[in-house]
Image (cartoon, rainbow, N blue to C red; front, top):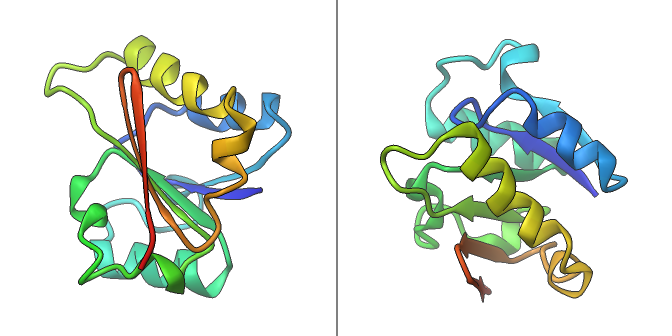
Length: 120
């Protein structure tokens, strides 16, 4: 899969995604650092990239209908989440290939011990 990594995630998220055989583009590397959510969503949609983010605004299917995207992965993070915590949470998701395969056109909300898949 091809992922767009939001700026609220650690820089090493790209490396983690690549280790699992995915392509990763970081918003900070393409001039979207500080961009508003609609801009990031528009880029993800136009480039057919699955957005991976810790921004829970992207879980609102009224504003971001999953069917319009190559996928949305929202990590439900505690306020004081460390890079280590974030990467471990994402890795626990990536290890579940059956769930990862369901991402296109859907929203995955990933939290410790649970993944919820929502459709449009």
